[in-house]
Length: 142
Image (cartoon, rainbow, N blue to C red; front, side, top):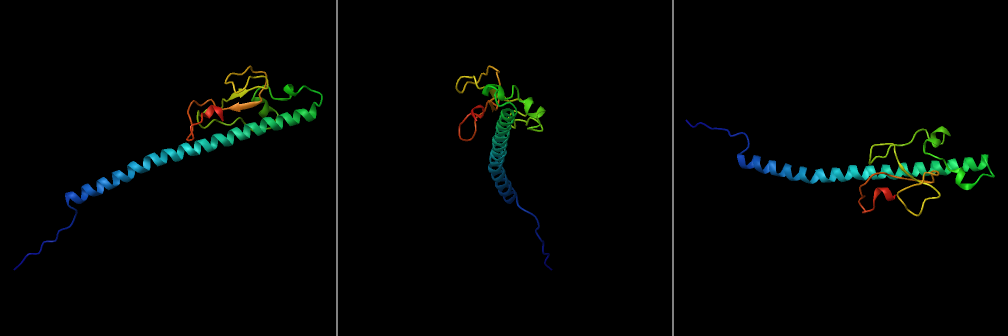
């Protein structure tokens, strides 16, 4: 009489091969997910900068209509919070790179693309993030 043994399960070699394959797949997926998250943050930064700049332009236009004889420099908000007080924006958006609602500003009397402002008014905004984007440009220069 013969006894037939059934062999169920995986050998050690098969387990090692599966583990290596899973490790390689995970190793390639992790950097891709980081790049995906970084790309989404960059898109959000561009959108929020655009919203702030459009808000500044709308504020300027409203002030021009209300005060036609006023000097051009006086038509811009003196601070970003003026946009919410004038109901141009509901709130100052958060910078996705810094996680904070503080932004760098430029006034109409600042020199060139200076990172320092004299605080005269708010003509433009920039991110206070110190990093660089995928294309190599600094976030603060957007």
